[in-house]
Each structure stands twice: as C-alpha cells, then as structure tokens.
Amino acid sequence: MRLFQTYEEENIHYWTNRASGYSGVNQEELSSDQKAVWRGVISRRIAARFPGRSPAQIRVLDVGTGPGFFAIILAELGYQVKAVDYTASMLEEAKRNAGALAEKIDFRQMNAEELSFPAASFDVLVTRNVTWNLPNPEKAYAQWMRVLKPGGLLLNFDANWYRYLWDEDAQEGHARDRENLQASDVRDETAGTDVDAMEAIARQTPLSRCHRPAWDLDVLRGLGMQAAADTQIWKQVWTKEERINNASTPMFLVEGWKQKPCEIA
Image (cartoon, rainbow, N blue to C red; front, side, top):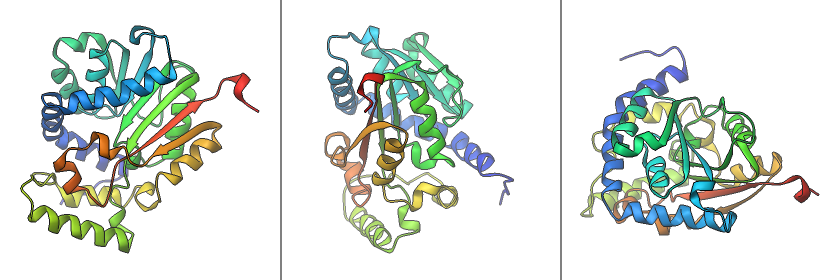
C-alpha cells in the first residue's frame, strides 16, 4: 500500500492513474447523443446571459477540464476557450481527444484554487464534478469570482458525491443504487476504478459532508454573487446508465452571476 504525505499528492496520484479510463468515458460522450445534450444545456444558458453576442465574442474558462469534454464542445460552438486541470496526464488526454480543435483551445496545467489569470478575464466559467474534490472549495469559488468579468456567468455542475460516507440516509440510498444496478441491464460505472482510493480521498474533502447545493449558494452569496440552483438538471443531462448508477445522488447545477457595479445595492 502506497503512503502519501499530503492530500494533494494522493489526489494527483489517483487522477493521474485515472486519466486514461476517464478519457474513455469522455470519448463515449463525444461520440453519442450526450454531446448534443450538453451543448444545448450550456449554450442556452450562455445565450440567455449574453443576448446578442456571438460565441466568438465570449471568453470561457473550463476549470478541471479532465479529458476535455466541456472544452471541446465549447470550442466546437465557436467560443474562445481556455481549459485548466491540475493533472498533466488529464491535459494530455484532453489534447488528444480535441484533435484538430486542440489548436483552438488554450490548455494549461493549473490549480483550480490558485488560478494565475488576471482579474476579470472571462465572461463564463464552467466546471463539472470538480468542486466536491477540492480541499478548499471556498477559496476556489473566490478565485472563480475573481477571474469572471462583471456580469460574468458561473455554471457549476456537481453532486453530493460520497456523502454516503458520512450520512446514514445517503448510505441507505447508495445501497439501494447498488441493488438496482445489479438488477438492471446497464454498466456499473465503478467497474475498473479504485473505489477504495476514491473513498479515501473523499474522506478528506470537506464537501463530502455538506448539504449541497445549499452550501454552494451560501458561499457564493457571501462573495457577493447572485446565485441559484437547478436541482433537476440531471433530468436533462444524465443518461439511463447515470440515473441508475447514481439515483440517490442527482446532479445539480449551481448558476452564479457576478454583479456589475450598477447592480450592487
């Protein structure tokens, strides 16, 4: 058994080893109807926030891009895209998955909690299944707000991942998910992954214990952002496989707007 000195070392080790398998999941999404589903969900929200502006006029940051799914679909839509990830192997997979589009996406290795971009650099910031995994999520949210322009839009898709490690009701729900999965005809999404290693990481992350998205809304509003949550977004973006595997842990969307000076009371 490998011993790690820090959470950061353990986390990087896990996601480095997970890069190839996770990339395979993204490749499936890119070759299926899911790509069109996600394109529609994200582009509609961006268009609603920036009416009359073309994608080419909108700067988007994809935080925790992983194998590049969001960055790729956004670049295909014509947005100006930068994408960051903490793990070099994930960025290698992302560039490979992007193919010819890799030249249009600015990929950078960067900590989601310590972004090096200047303040007010982006119109939109998107992220998926990242916040739960961060050791200092409040710091991340503050950084994300910093790099958004006044009037900028935050789209954070996440879930109460691994809450079953701390909550009895969530544990019962997780057990039911496993039973329903065994009785179904869909693939077990944990097959081929090191569940023990992931749970060891989750036990060290603060958000595994929190009630979300209520926690996120409190933090964002405390930072001065307007924020709302769509707890039904999973009905739009999840496949049958995802719904059966994760029925007790539905995906939500935290949507935030950085107020312009004239909007602040």
